[in-house]
Image 1 (cartoon, one colour):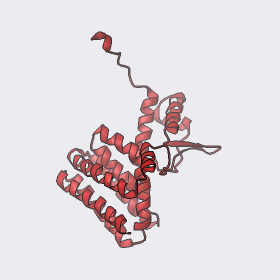
Image 2 (cartoon, rainbow, N blue to C red; image 1 turned 60 degrees about the vertical axis):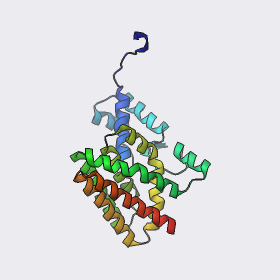
Image 3 (cartoon, helix red, strand yellow; image 1 turned 90 degrees about the vertical axis):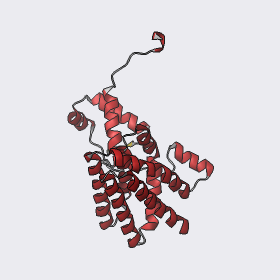
Length: 234
C-alpha cells in the first residue's frame, strides 16, 4: 500500500492567490471589465511575492477569467457565449437554446437554494444582500444589472458549502452571464417585470436568511420558472 501513497504537499502561494482572485470574480466583487490592481499593489496587499502574483494572474488569463490589454493593464474578462467554455461549445454543437440553459438552471439552482438555506453564514447573507442592492442601484441608473444578477446566483452557490456545486457554477459562469444578459435585454422593456424579478430575488434571499430550505427551493423554482415562461412566450 505504501507504494500507492504520495507525499502531501502544501498548497503553493500562487494557487492560494489564484483561488482568492477567482472567488472575487465569481462572486462579482471584481466585475467584468474592471481593472485588476497592478502586481506590485496586489503583492503588497496580500503580503506575497510579485512572482507568486504573476503566476496566479497568468493562470487566470489562461483560463479566461482575466485578460491583458496592451498598455492598459489586466482586466476581468467580459464573458460571452462563444468563449472557450465546454458548456458553450456543447450548446453550439447541439444547437441548444436559451430555454435549454434555463431548464438546466431550474434543476441546478433550486437544489442550491435549498442547501444554501441550510448552510448559509452571516457572511453569505451579506453577499446576497449586497448583490440585491447593487441590482437595484444599476436598474435605477438605467443598466440591466447583469453583473449583480449573476453575483446573486453565485453567492447562493457559495452558500451551499458544496465544492462540487461551486465548481459547476464557476464553469457555468460564462453561460449564466450570457443567459441572464439575454433574458434581461427583453425583460427590461417592461419595468413591471423587472420589479417582479427584484421581488423574487428578495423572497429567495429571505428564505435563505430564515434557513427555510423548502421555501428557498420553491422561491427559486418560481423565479427561474417565471423567466422561462417569459422566454417561451416572447
